[in-house]
Structure formats: structure tokens, C-alpha cells
Image (cartoon, rainbow, N blue to C red; front, side):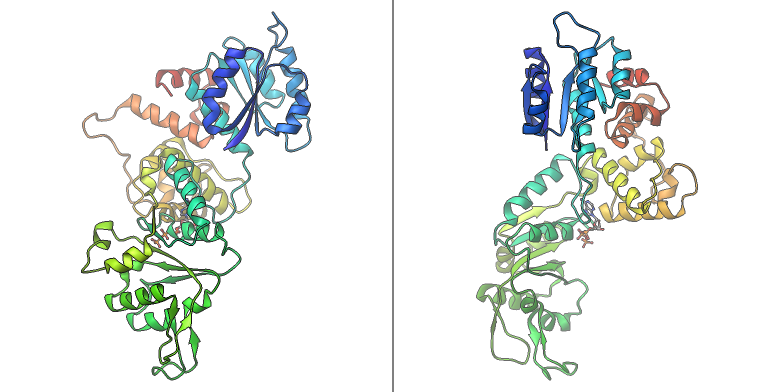
Length: 433
Ligand SMILES: Nc1ncnc2c1ncn2[C@@H]1O[C@H](COP(=O)(O)OP(=O)(O)OP(=O)(O)O)[C@@H](O)[C@H]1O
């Protein structure tokens, strides 16, 4: 989400742009360049969509270029400028790019093109993501982040569901950060990794001598997380006997350490996660329904990576390849490789993608990354069985992948594909992109 200012003296054009762009954030419209500086100070847009002509009859774009230069020269944070030109004004568009515009859009535009162009400009202005941030701009990930913001602020128990490596722990951390308990600790307990005999002492603590190895008294995780959040990972692996004890602790909001008969009050918010299929979780022979109802006041489902779309895969690739480049500029991903990575199923989800990026960054020798560099099991590009090798489809995928990698920047995408900008525009038109 961002702040977008549209400057166009044609009220109809400005309105059409405002309607198309409103789902990207807060959109304001000005019809005259008079007072633009003050408007920029006041509204502080991330992106300025700038018309190039303002005087009646003028078509040389001089007024627009002059405004563009003023805006670009403003002290940071100056907005990213996307200029609007008429279809034939390629020369003017080039001048604008040279003067510091991040992109141009020709009128009349297809709304999807305008949205993609402004979205890319917004993304370029967005601050670099903090470590551990849940990345993804697909509708599914935006929805998930909105849910986190909403339920994070409450004390509700949240059950986080999703396949291996989708980011359930990141979701738990984000919920904790969004909560009033953010200043307190977040303690994670991996139920899958704990031997059954140790579950109780780990969660509830023990008194010295309560069992053979208990040389010292030890507070359990419930007590250690006081004032904060306890994240019970792989909850589906908790044996039935311990499920009963966990239920009792949650209901009474107190725990009794092993070897003690004095209950200790606890002050934690409990988050739980599992990669078990929901059907298994709702099987009373494996998981107590009463415990499930305690844990799942809110259920958050983290979608598998293959359901988030090519743009999210490309975004995560960019993020992790930059991360593993360790300060050096990251190499590009070859267009064919990108199309195949976007179509790959990612059974290990984001964790698998992260590891594949680490492998490629360490081992690849070429100037660009190829599909083989990522060391993924599936080596053949997926070819739809019935249609065979559909050239048009492959071209469409390559264009999509290049646009995703170039974050919607047409010049860069054209460079990646080895075609001119004009040829890329024709391809966008041909494939209705
Ligand atoms: N949306 C995301 N953006 C950036 N990184 C992510 C995202 N989702 C997951 N990751 C990264 O992928 C890796 C796996 O994430 P995480 O441990 O949270 O997954 P999980 O669902 O808890 O896995 P498991 O089920 O195996 O416990 C981590 O390195 C995490 O930082």
C-alpha cells in the first residue's frame, strides 16, 4: 500500500487513473501544477503519476519535463515519478527516463498495465524488508498479513496451519510482535523434537530430584515465557497423555512442576502450529477435540508457495539471492530458469527455495543463474501433457517471468529477454498482459 499523487489537467484521465489505482493505496488528484511543491510536502506521495503537457494545445512535453526535474531534485524522500505520454511520444518518454522518471505509461493505457507500472514504482520505494519479515504480495499473503495485524493485538489462541517450510514460525513471530506482549519473551517449543518422557518437564518444569536426571529444579517453558508468548510447534505430535495435561494448564492458567504439588500461575499467550492435515487434527483418536478448541480460537492457514503465484516466487528469489550475495550485487536468473522456478512445485515451500538460493549462490559459476544451479529434483520444464510444447505459452511465461524479475520495469524486462522495448510492448499486447 502506498500514497499516489496523479497530476493531469484532463479531469477524465485523472479520474480513470484514480479509480484504477485506488486498490494500491491512498490516491490524490491535482489538475494543475500550481502549488505542486506544497502538495508534495503535504501529501508526501510515494509515487507521482505525471502528465507531460499542461498548457492548452501544448504537446512538446516541456512543462512536464521541467516539473519532473524539479521533483527529482527534491531532497529525499522524493517520490518515484511515472510519466504519462501519448502513444507516439517515444522520444519524450526516453527524455523523461533520462531525467529521472522511473517508468512511463502511454495513453490510452490498459488498466492492468497502469496498475503493474505504479505497483513496481511503489515496490522500488518500499524500504528493504526487515530480517524475518513475511514477504509476498499475492492476495493470499496480503490477506494473511492483514489477519496477523487483526488478531495479533488480541490475547486469542491462534492455531497456525500449513505445510512444512511455509513460514508458520515467522507467522508466530509476527503475531507476537503485533501483540501487547511484544516486549515479553517469545519461547518456541518444538513438540516434534522432544522425547515423550521430557515433554512435561520441558513445558511445566520440575523440582530437584523429581526424576533421575533432575539434579536441579528447572522452571518450565510456561513459566519462563511469563508476560510473553509460548509457541508450541508441531502440536500434532503431542502424545494423548500430554495433551490432557496441556489442556488442564490452559484451562486453569496454572502449571504444576513435576515433583511438586504447588501449582504456579502462568501468564502466557499460546500460539500453536502443525503441518498435519486438518482431517488428521480433527480425528479424535489422535487429537483431543477439547484441546483443539482451546487452541484454535483463531485458525490461520499459511498457503503453500505453489499457490502464491509466480510474482511471489520471483520476489522471494530476489530477496534470498540478494541475501546470499552478501553485499555484492546478486546475479540475474536466466529467463528460462525463472520460468521453470516459477512453475516448480516447491514441496518444501519457502525453506526449500531459501536453501536452493543458498546453494546456487555458493556453487554457481556462470554470470547468470541457470535452473541447474538451484539443485532442484525436477529438472525438466513442466510441459502441459495435451498441448505439448506450446511456443506461444512459453513466450508468455518468459515475458511474465522477466516482468516479475524486473519488478515491472519495462526497460529491464526487455533487456532480460534480449528484445527492444517496442518488441516487448507488442508481446505484452499479444498476450494480453
Ligand atoms: N513469506 C516469507 N518470506 C520470507 N521468508 C520466509 C517466508 N516464509 C518462510 N520464510 C523462510 O523460510 C524458512 C522456513 O520458515 P518457517 O520455519 O517459519 O516455516 P515453518 O512452516 O514453521 O516450517 P516447519 O513446518 O518445517 O516448522 C525460514 O528461513 C523463513 O525465514
